[in-house]
Amino acid sequence: MEPKEIMEQQLWEYIDGISSPAEKSQIEQLIASQQEWKEKYQELLETQQWIRSVEIEEPSLRFTKNVMEEIARHQIAPAAGKYINKKIIWGIAAFFITLILAFTIYAIAQIDWTDPGSSNLSVGMDKVDLSKIFNNTFVNVFMMANAILGLMLLDRYLANQRDKKHKEA
Image (cartoon, rainbow, N blue to C red; front, side, top):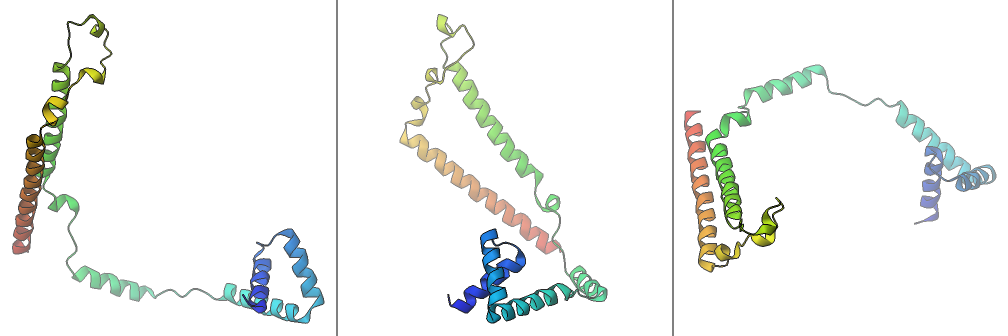
């Protein structure tokens, strides 16, 4: 930075009150002893007073009303409750609840209830063996393909619903 820029920055920090006490005393000495610092300080004080005295311009009430009327003429997007199909949401929720229940039932079925160590209700995850199901590549590919096909079906359904809404409007 150039010396004038450094001087101006230090003076602004002094005027704003963010300089340290040591810097404040140093700047006060420079203002008292050097004419250039004193002139710049007076100029920056006048600038700050002018900035504080200027009122922020606001648009007229008629302008605001005109803008709101123009917006009202255009079709406003409907609320989310009108274009989100609740059946899809319930279907997704039912799928996940069924999946969680299936895994829970499978985990409980894997527990050896005849083992005397399992009489207390602490069930360790070491007794649940999911590797019998999910170690097969075919099963993993099948599940991934079903997920992709389900998303594609959902996309087509939503696109059809959107097209129906646009035709009605």
